[in-house]
Image (cartoon, rainbow, N blue to C red):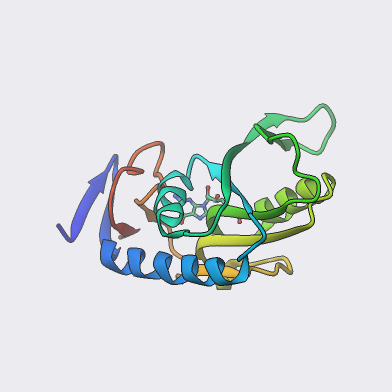
Length: 177
Ligand code: 5GP
């Protein structure tokens, strides 16, 4: 199906499953080479990265671990508005080679915040592995070592990413019409 409806919006097929899987395999192979002998700790960011993390890990062949974190929004006490706190961070990040597994980097503000929080735990190294990047929207200077797919500045759904809670189960990625 090339056009679908999720809630009140129409979406058209933009990245088919086979292209997603090929891109993931390519990045996993790079990781296998770069992290040989370093036993990386993958930290996947819920909810959006759940499907990407599963497929990435099936292509990772070196000894490694995976854990899942979540950024929870809550209203701050002061005038700063929304503050995001990181929950689920495992013990023992210090000295580890951490690879953050994220669904999409848009403005990059979420990733910047995540990197700052993780750096405080003194890992040996941190790199970013994102399924998707919107280069036109990036507002901050980020070093994204592994990026499976670059996309234009349009809203997408599917393969873990939602529109108003729905569409995460779609095997392909769709762009809003
Ligand atoms: P950033 O902080 O980089 O602007 O935003 C990152 C977050 O925004 C992602 O983790 C994701 O939850 C959400 N996001 C950004 N662009 C899209 C999009 O096109 N579709 C969906 N479903 N979420 C998006």
